[in-house]
Amino acid sequence: MTLAELLVALVTFGLVAAAVVTLLDEGQRAWAYGAARAETQQSARVAMARLTAEIRGAGRGGQGFAAVAVAAPEQIVLQQDLDGDGVIAARGERVTWRLDGAILRREAGGGAQPIINGVRALTLTYFDAAGAPTTTPAEVRSVEIVLVTRPDYSVAGSSVSTVLTTHVRLRNR
Image 1: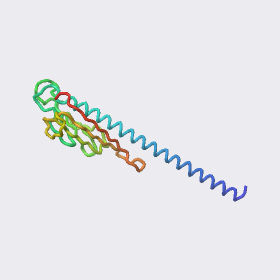
Image 2: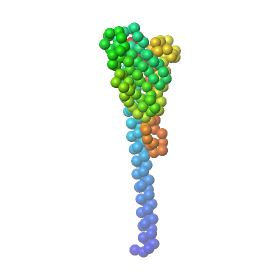
Image 3: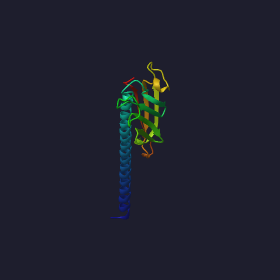
Image 4: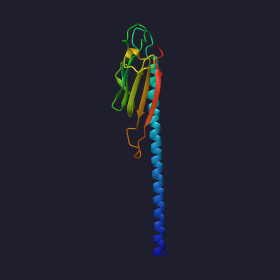
């Protein structure tokens, strides 16, 4: 084996090794992107399902109180009379959903518990019985929710985000 053959073999090996490393790196980036996308979608769906179920149930147990106590763009306070005593005071009868930084929190009498992390935006738009936008809590009959989530870490230099939108009608009003 001559020096020239050895150099040709080393150059060929180097090119093949560089191609393999590049291929593995791209595969790892694709996997990380897919995993982050699945994580953001799953957490957004869980939060959206819980929030929509509680909005639908708001106002249960009577008509002597507002189903929505606070109608803010990033916070909603829902009320229901679970024990049927006509007073909104028991634990779980007043539920607050709010965005706190990048954490969506739910408070039902035991402190604000985190539901999901990585929330970049929560937008709540309120509508009255005629479908017109309103900011008066007693007039709210439906809510449009826009939830944007993104992982807390950077994925392969790209932005992975999930946007979920739904329109929920209060069943008890």
